[in-house]
Length: 191
Ligand code: PRP
Image (cartoon, rainbow, N blue to C red):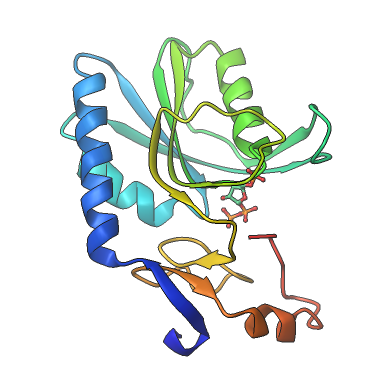
């Protein structure tokens, strides 16, 4: 797979160190709180696995599968929930764990949805915040990296469902997605 990667942006050691720092902050901030980590599948699965193990608290972990659509320039959008939480969030401190925030649409809608269910608090921990103008405002309380606007894969991030298992975050060579753009099952997420 390495031959498809233009360059490595964050190597495994760098990611490990940052995730540990974020986990330490979360441990400090959520002392004596009932914390529920909500992983947004699929992209967050690697980050969540490492982050959860760097938090020294008795957290509960659950997952959602969501997708969003809406105009990049309008303030509204629609959240589709393909897999919901298996526990109620009312009165609980929820920390959404995401791999990447791009337009901000998905996270803004998801946070709003969980707040409307009566969560005591809803915060966001994100692996990558893309340095692009955001059409939907999202407050990321915890953010491991601010990254450039490039097509990133690895450590959970995919292109056409591949590369999620790379232990680092790299920039995909343009010829990989340009070649496969003709292929009907190749999903271009815009990353
Ligand atoms: C990615 C990512 C976020 C969303 C971010 O999900 O995991 O959920 O896009 O984009 P936004 O800020 O513009 O809303 P994707 O649909 O690629 O699914 P995946 O997690 O299964 O890879």
